[in-house]
Image (cartoon, rainbow, N blue to C red; front, top):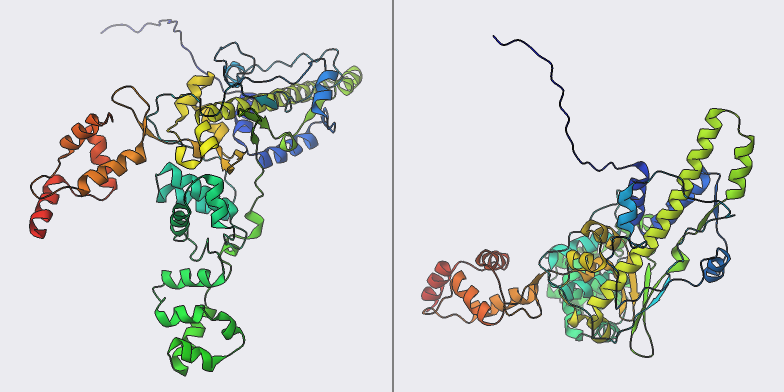
Amino acid sequence: MAGLMQKLDMRQGQSLVMTPQLQQAIKLLQLSNVELAEFVEGELERNPLLERDDRNDSTESLREEGQGEPRELELAAPSADANDSMDADADMMHGDDSKSDLSGVEGVESGAAIGASSSSTYSAGSGGRGPASEDYDAIANSSREISLAEHLHEQLSMATGDPVDRLIGAHLIDLADDDGYMRSDLDEIAQQLGVERARVEAVLSLTQTFDPAGVMARDLPECLALQLKDKNRLDPAMAALLDNLERLARHDYPALKSLCGVDNEDLDEMIAEIRDLTPKPGHAFGSDSTRAVSPDVFIRQSPDGSWQVELNSETLPRVLVNNSYFNEITAVAKSETDKTFITECSQNASWLVKSLDQRARTILKVASEIVRQQDMFLAHGVAYLRPLNLKTVADAIGMHESTVSRVTSNKYVATPRGMFELKYFFTSAIPSAGGGEAHSAEAVRHRIKTMIGQESASDVLSDDSLVEQLRDEGIEIARRTVAKYREALNIPSSVQRRRILKRAG
């Protein structure tokens, strides 16, 4: 039996420590502008060294701090240098707990206005393209009560994979009021988005199937009709009653009986059904849970046709570290507890200032790259939306995909074609067989459906045959992907389709 012995081993390993400051920086990155303002308000109450910056002219404040003009971010040449001071990833991952150097500075501005103005140097339609193969995977960051708009957006993401329809649907949902009605003019929406009115109507009809029943209606009769349709009670007599609600309001029952072709008993039952419906379906979510959406970024077209990307400085909270007060209370602090508290307040304030600056710069970089990739959409309409994923943007600006994901969550951009959440610019894509421009996944699904729809009993395409034909058309796709798309379209296998076609023949 071998004797017991002690042994000393040395092992080397690497690990990332998530300091509280690093966790805070990541949290700030994924907050919406409304949530960020609430967070900063809480920090102002807790930390005596923080002060709100009430100066309106951000450019003047930067000059006072000796930083010169606001820094511009050239869209034509985004930096991917790991040493770039504007790269929030590099700064965050260092996890530096040390206090920022505040010597000789009365107050350090949060930097929310730094880089708030940037203009492009390329013309519309010249945006870059990159490989794209992944679906957008947004990170859910909110535990608060869901709003009506969020509830509808969640259903939209499951109802369609078409990037164009998703953008149209998102725009329609954002136009809905607290009652759940979409009262905007469809012709104006179609012109703004650069699509046909028929497509806007089709997407609106899709959103009108969402829960709660009656939502996204354009008027009261349509709202009630949608609810009755959901209950399978929208017959011709009920439709006639809905077309004459003004007579119902006047209690003109003889005319209603004649118009609907019913007797007294049937009319009473129909009126009772109408009274059981909800005229304002949006109120089921409560007005308190509905939050106003303000854009985080503005995109405007310059006279020369280029695109200018600018942060919404009005929604960016600006805070200062009161260095004079820090020096004053440090001089009179005697106990170790007081000194520790003052030091912690100084470190937390400095880190918050730095985190707000990083957040602003990171949002600007991500938004600028999205504009570069989707400039055809901005110039010509939603039908020109390009395939785009997180990795393409992350590689272009030298950041991690998770950072881009957090930046695009709960962030809105105001464009000449409306206001959209940044995540809606990300769509899946299929690479081109010839190395050319990638194809939208939805376009590939549509092509598969068209090819199968043209089959005959003697010429049924297997999944392998579909792969070959798609490759001949310049679409590089795997057999399992074709099978997945076919099943998602509820299309049977080639064997089953052959049997169906033979029976039909």
